[in-house]
Length: 79
Image (cartoon, rainbow, N blue to C red; front, side, top):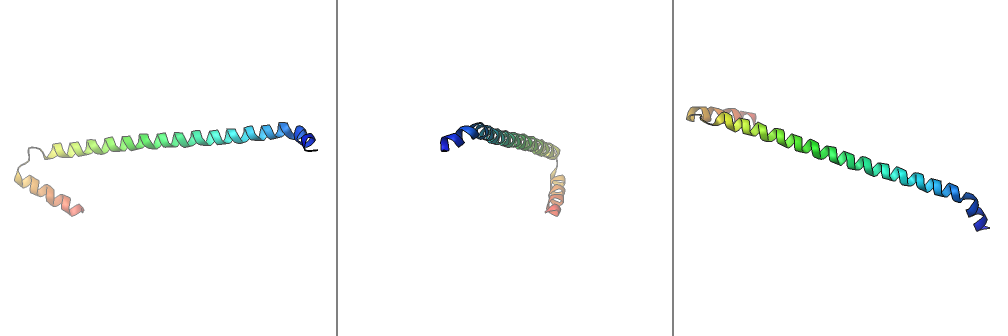
């Protein structure tokens, strides 16, 4: 009885299993792609922040004492 039902629906069960496996594999690939995009965005943001910091330091080099004090005042206002 069970073997008769199983032989009758065996093809459908295999097809359903293959469909579920394909959906699972697609979901994993999308998750990996999203993780990769986030990593790239993080690296890009980090590089931009480093460059902005380097430019800010370069602006302060060669300043005299009065310019440094004025820079500190401007910075403390933003806090």
